[in-house]
Image 1: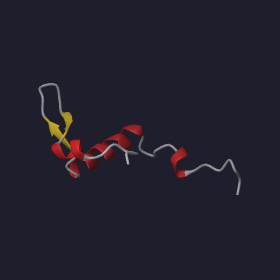
Image 2: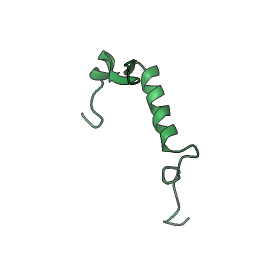
Image 3: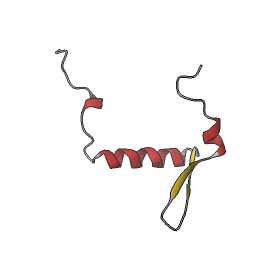
Length: 60
C-alpha cells in the first residue's frame, strides 16, 4: 500500500460541500442540540439548552 493513498476524508463530497453542511445541520437539529428560528430574512439556527450543555470537544 502506498503512503500517498487517498483516504475517504480526502475525496470531495459527491454532492458538494453545501450538502455536507446541510446534512450536519439537519443532524444537529434532530439531536436537539440546535433549533431553527424563523426570521423575516430566513431561518436562523441557535443552540438549545442541551446544545449549551455539551462539553467542548477535547475537554477532559
